[in-house]
Image (cartoon, rainbow, N blue to C red; front, side, top):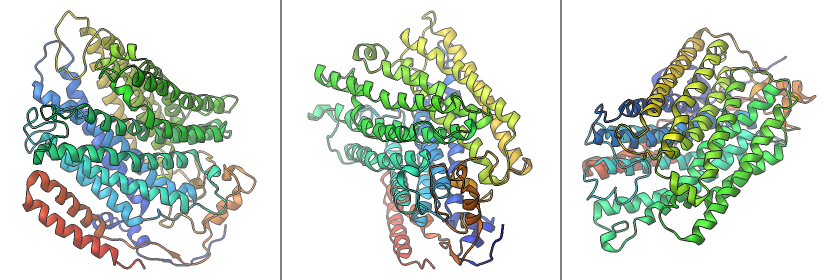
Amino acid sequence: MTTTTAPVTGVGAAAHADSGLWSWITTVDHKRIGVLYGVTAFIFFLIGGLEAVLIRIQLVRPENTFVSPDVYNQLFTMHGTTMIFLAIMPLSASFFNYLIPLMIGARDVAFPRLNAFSYWVYLLGAIFLNLSFFLGGAPDVGWFGYSNLTSKQFAPGVGVDYWAVGLQILGIASLAAGFNFIVTIINLRAPGMKLMRMPVFVWMTLVTSFLIIFAFPVITVALVFLLFDRMTGTNFFIPAAGADPVLWQHLFWLFGHPEVYILILPAMGIVSDILPTFSKKPLFGYPVVVYSGIFIGFMGWGVWSHHMFSVGLGPVADSFFALTTMLIAIPTGVKIFNWIATMWGGRIDLKSPMLFAVGFIALFIMGGLSGVMHSSPPADLQQTDTYFVVAHIHYVLFGGSIMGIFAGIYYWFPKMTGRMLNERLGQLHFWLTMISMNVTFFPMHFVGLLGMPRRVYTYAPNMGFDQMNFWSTVGVFGIVLSVLVFIWNVLHSRSRGAVAGRDPWGGPTLEWAIPSPPPPHNFATVPTVHSRDPLWEKDGEQIVRTANERRGPIHMPPNSYWPFLGALGMTMLLSGMVYGWWVGIPGLILMLVAFYAWAFEPVH
């Protein structure tokens, strides 16, 4: 293969080769930002896991005193908040950042500096949220913050303020990313890559991005109302003043149920791209898989009140939301049948990515079935606020999202690093995870049906809860062991793993056409795409040659420290609502200076 040596202009290439800390702080390279997202989110995944371990130690036996009730309430609030907003969402975002330009044939995202800004806002917001543990106490009202638990009367400390302001900061990061990826996917696709030729992961990223930009303003409004109630004496959620606390539930779950699909759709996209590669055949029913993902995105807005069947909304509302909850299971079931049909008759290669993808399907089916049970208001009244719901959400978010994310890590780690993860350790990681996850969460179905409530820090003996709680705690330590195996695999393989090469799995999509790890500019020449699986078509070799032949100068965006400073100023401004004007005013000044300099910064 012949290549030319036309220059790469801009700071991007030099910065990519520079491993210094400053180059990472100022980077606008989507691949580096993806790595930053992934490493940071995994650290918070470990923090959320530690919180879960402490919760399970407290519940291992009745009338335990391992932690106090107040600490327990802080732990379960921060565990849910951390896993949803600081771990699973940004882990998905790490794949968005690293892979979307590679999969659509672009050299970067549409707005590289906005991309960097999004990461730094996320990091600073996450740090701010966790500072509450050390500066006045963490929030202790549940990750859903139901009124009127969040009022000054019942939560007089600063924990709820940290939670509300922290979520506002994180929401800004999510909105910036959402708009960025919508523009990137719509405008920067390679020639010939029509919408129905995009990989399913790109489609699910697009749907997820639209969900983000429409869902987060809803929780923003709710949090603004809450902060007004707490800080200025308004009465949006105060029953004594004639307000209705159920308003918070409507606003929160109108955000919260699309949020569930924000968490699961990226994993569905990952699995939809892994299964064809390891079945050696195209995805069965590609258009149906895409349309079902879009339909889930639309239907996700019409099911929120199934979280509120116990509120007493009346038979008409209950009947409507019961019906929509049943209907939304249809596109999910369609996806499952398409995934199974993809494997049917294929030459299946059960490498680690495929194992996690198949494990995702099995566990997500179990979580989905218990979810459909909640569509019946009489059944839901029995199950709501019990450990049955805890089991359901963990089968969906751990068995679904986390298993899908692990599948993606094993699949694309060679592309990101140029090294293969150890396959034997990967298989050990999978089986430890699969077994331990079921040991942990499957008993919760039964302990919930027996009547054990959620969010209680202990329970009386001789109620039938003892043995199942014991096994759930044993299972958590199995999950800890599986994660330790994964960490060792990554650390060891990063420097000593087998060299991966350009396309170790024989994948069909564009990211496998370029070297591993990719160069700063991704594609020397952006190829023209003629099919849905371009590397599996007869012109696949020509696409590989084109992608690696440089035919002219390549401009890369220069590094910039203004996104970091803008994010720091904005975080200081919002945190001033907790710390006071002496933090907020300097933050406002720094933010305005950074944004002004950003707006006029040369891009050449």
